[in-house]
Length: 156
Image 1 (cartoon, one colour):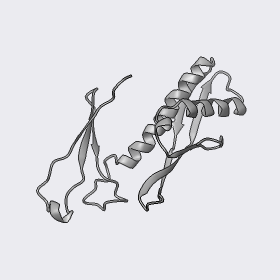
Image 2 (tube, rainbow, N blue to C red):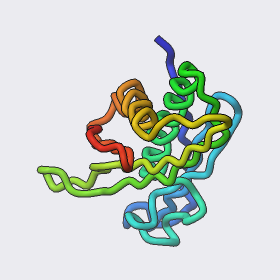
Image 3 (cartoon, one colour):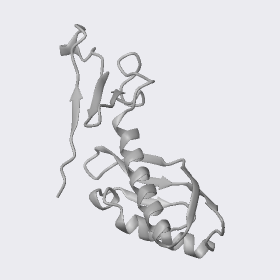
């Protein structure tokens, strides 16, 4: 099977590390040459120790689930002879505490809006495609987080 790699880089800015007063800003670098500014979430570590204009791990987690679902949905739709004009999703991840009191991303709700070229499938057929996409998405299959598609229901 394939391997997927990411390089995570952080360097001290000289601030008081031992007292927790250090920047959480870092970078994520990927094999195609893309480097993304990253940080802890300002909802977890306050600004200025977190960077508001960087991607945080929680956002990236939600985005990876939504992206995988979309890519799987597009593949399945193309196999069904459908033509997609656009696909947008306003995915929302919710955090709660687990049985040990540790915060985790316990649920992700996908809110896809799909526009078709030509004839669109029935709402039932579109829901079935989303269910199949969920079942085949390797990211959703890799996590304990409950993943739902708004309006489809029945997915975990």
